[in-house]
Image (cartoon, rainbow, N blue to C red; front, side, top):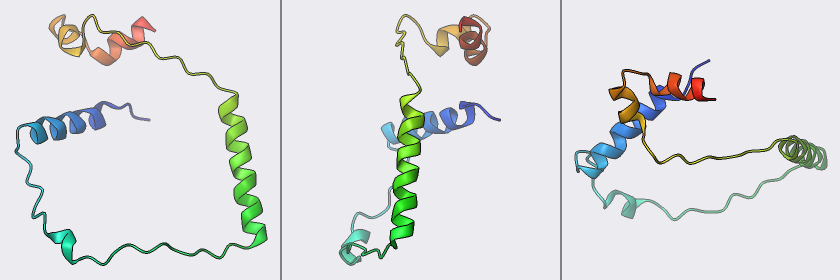
Length: 96
């Protein structure tokens, strides 16, 4: 199992470099030659439709049995924690 550190580092790098104009997005004319998108028409059997609906119900039931609480802490962030010589991930895990 892995935490979000690698993904977070990559995201920070991408955002930072986008803001600084360091990422070349290529030509904006490339999409002009593409055909217009067309809606796909799916042929789904009654059995498959039933299983899709049953899966949706099972997912809705699972989600309804969970709670989510979010606390936004703005007093200091990871840079302040790093200046303390601590890992931000370990800091939050100990706080929990």
